[in-house]
Every structure is written in C-alpha cells, then in structure tokens.
Length: 556
Image (cartoon, rainbow, N blue to C red; front, side):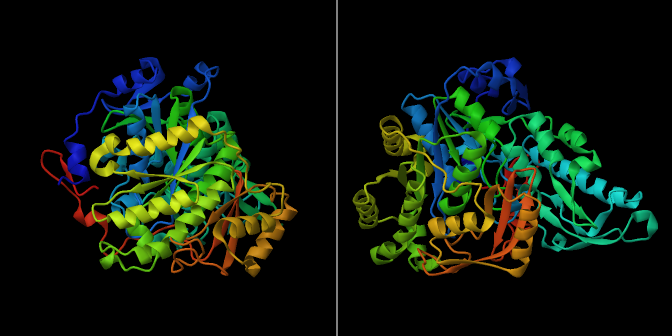
C-alpha cells in the first residue's frame, strides 16, 4: 500500500485557477503562487458581503494519544464527501509548522486519500506566511533592544521585557538565551529566549484580525515590556507597528489549494493550540463562508483545548456560530485511554474500550454545553473488530448522539459519505442554541474556574504566588476583562499528561498568567507547557531526503 507522500505525488492536480473558478473567484480575486497555490484577495469579502454565510462545521477530537486520531484527515475526507453528495463545500484548515513537521509529526496535510495538495509545499515553506510572522515578530524584538541601546527614553526595565524572539523550528537550546554580549557596541546584555513562531502573539493576531488595518492596530496594542515604574510599554511606543504590518501585507491573505479530489481548501494560520489558540484565521473562515454553502474547519488538539478556544475565543471575536461539531475518535486511541499499551492496541479489547470511552463521553458533554449538536466520527483502522465498532455505536446511540464510521484514509470522500449524511442531517434539521461558556467580564479566576471545572472536570484550581501577582497586576491595569486562552497538556483532560481517560478529583495548577493584549486574550499556563518544543530522539527529519530530480522522500 502506498504511503501518504506516494499517494500525494501520484495525484493529478487541477490548476488552481480552475479550483478558484469552482467557488466563484476570478483571476482578479487571486494572487498566483505557481500553478497549484494562490492567495485570495481580501476584497472578496466586500464583494460578497450581501451573500448569506454558509453552514459552519467544526471538526475536533478526543484527547490525542500516540495511537492517533486523524482529525485533519477526517476534516478533508468530510469535505470531499460533502462534494460527492453534490454540495458546495469548502475546507478551512490550519497551516503546518516546520518545527513539528521535522520533529514528531513528519507532516500535517491529512493522510491517505484525504489529503490537501501540493502536500510537499504545504508542509514546507508554502507561501511564506510563517516567515513573515517570524520577521514581523523579530523586527519588534530588534526595536526593543535598539531603543534601550539608543538611550532608552521610554525607561524600559530590561528585567521586564515580555516579548520574545521566535523561529519556526523546534530548538530546545534557544529556550533561554543571553543577548547583547560582546561589549557596548552590541547593546545591553540581558536574558532572553525564543518561542516557536506559531506560539507567538503575532500568530494569534494574524488569526484573529478582521483586516490589514485591524492587524496593524492589534500590533500597536502589544505589551512588550514594563518601565521601571511598572507601567506597560506598548508596541506603538516604539512606532514599528506600521513596518510590522507591511511585512504581513501578503501573509494576511488566505491560501487556496485543493484536496486529492479537487475540493477547494483554504489554509491559513493557527497550528499551535495552546498559547496562540490553535484555530485557523477568522478571515479564512469568513471567506470560506461567503464562497461555500458548507465549510468544514478544525481546531487543534482535543475538544477540551482546540474546540473550547474555537468556541470561546474565535467565535466570540469573529461573530461565528457553528452549526455542528464533529468529534473524531479512533478505537485504538480509546483503548489507549482505557490503559492498553501501544504494542497491544491492535488486539480486540472491548473492556479497555469501555474504560477509555469515558474520554469521548466527556468531550461530547463539553460540546453540548455550548448548545451545539455533536456527531461522533469513528476514524476506521483495519484492526478495528466488529465487536469494538458495535460497542462505540451502541454507546453513542444510548447517549442520543449520531455516530458514523469514517474510512476516509483508504477511500477518500467515498469513505466519508455516512459521516457527511449524519452531519447534513444535524445541520439541516437542528437549530444551534449557541452560547459561550463564560462571560468575559468575570474575573480571571472566575473564568479559569469555569473552564477547568466545566470542560476539564477539575475539582479545584490552584494559582501559584507568581500567577496571583500577575493577576493582581492585570486587574490594576484593567486588562483582566478578556477571553481566556489556557495552555495545558493536550494528552489529558487534566494538566497531568499521565492521567488518561476521564479523571476526576484532580487539581489544575496555574503557574503563569500572561496578557496577549494585541490578540485580545489572557494566556493562562498550567502544568509544564513548552512554548519552544524540542526535537525527539529520532526526529522525522532523519527519514527525509530529496532526489536528483527534486522528488521528496519521508514527508508523511
């Protein structure tokens, strides 16, 4: 059987101009990046402002495991299936980050016969969006240190610079650094550090901005440091927000590609589901809603992280209302949540499945708290037994929740027809009573307690002394009445990755509270969260190569 990259390389792609034409875009509406990729000009939103929005379908998942869930694959397969049913469907995905591509994941463009193409381009530099984010971010960092070097008229306290440099690669050696060494000519030495580009506030701003001028205003609102009196220093004080926006003038435009079955796919921003909220851009989603009758999008990690941020942050900021939420699960992953080790996941084990299915149940309950109807998608593996499949089907039916097998890795859109029909039934026959989980005018502690207790199932939230001080500071600055973006392990409902299934009675430990003022939310860090990942012992990069004819090996 062919692997993902072999399937992608053997595919016949249509010219992107043809894909654009399918959804009503002219050559004046797009900027070409070769034959198979283009950017969509933002004027499209104004041109189609009178057109009713399509239906919005969110794809999320149970808590991820080493066994795999296939959220992006199901997203692509569902979009293809809707098109096979004669629907005008568009997929809205997140861009892959180079760090995970060369680190653990090896690629992030779907899989099997449910992929977006050109897969190699999408997983590599694509249209340069993340390079633009990196440049804009590091321009601001350079401006901060240059201001101090040139006399520091803003009285910036070098000990309280909060804005870090970034690069789009996993590199643990850059987590903590010292800059400015080498004498007076190189500025003032200070401790610094790098985050991965996709965890940056600039990434979050790209994904939450309404247009280019809103992007520039959000850049201006970034708090970069504090002065010696404890007052915030903003990006606007350094007067570089215009230059930063200039660097982002093309990156703000959503990217259009296609699936293996030529379904239009808009890919733009959002791969890091902790610090930067992990959803694709509001602009991309809104463009898709104006071009398609059905839009299938995704949110990072499990529903306790990605879907919560999608519903409480993205929908709040963008005025979006989801019509249906698909929760992806695999029997293998649920058995892992039930205590089965990775080497035994291929063996039928209904008892372990019965223990692990509690994780799925919790994620179903979480989606229902928002007043949206969930549909469960079982991403099928060849090792799934009939007894295991029937158990999941019966379990969901007993909860009154639609469930469908998705065999989209092997069969593409054809393998997602049952899922598409279940989703269409929900979309066409139910009216979402959508509501946010919390009022953003509540205190930081109140909002965090609601998320932790309602979504995670925690018994208590404890705040470190450092977090307490940070909350007090934000309250004094009147910056506390914002949405909450929780950084938490993706592997558990708790902040402990070892607690699988549906734990209870646990405590969520808040260690750090940060303001992302430009993005418009407060980041609450729990447990041990890395904003700059490291490479594993055997990075995916070791399996990659390029041949003399330019063919790429090892991406998957």
